[in-house]
Length: 241
Image (cartoon, rainbow, N blue to C red; front, side):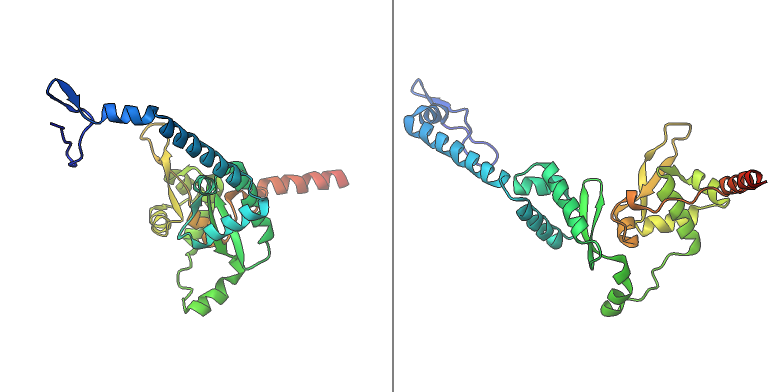
């Protein structure tokens, strides 16, 4: 008899009948070693190699078009590795195409937002008011001053613990941190390897979308510390004297 597995398909163990082994293994071995089977396998290899060569020879303009289309239909941030696999190209080619699209959309109604290996097509920040009126959405979702203060600290000093945010602000930040997490603007990034192993926080992809920033590296530079400005003014006064 032929043994069966749980799915009801014959297994490849086979059985014994009249001193002969009955099963699929011997039959498959004959098929695999036959000239016809070998020819089919060789043809399949040629077809696969040809397909890969065709995909890898995509023009840069075609790659940009396909990536733009994928970003348009994606219901969230798209993974660059997934796009590379879909196109059969290297991840470096996807990165180049994304950078090119980012430059081409500058000053337009849409923009490319990127965080690590995730990319998304989003509306430009200066179109928010018009879009809200068009969709009939109120602007009541704006953050409070306290939430903006805490978010700015996290954005520029991430990864950072809640206690560190408290120290910079000088007040307890539990409430605003919960609000920022609920709005998906910040997220836990891990734990600090020290006593108590406190949670460290960083900004999210939604943070970039909310502020219309292409990447975290695009944040405007911080102004110099007040003490530094005062020292420069004093030095200038001494030099003039």
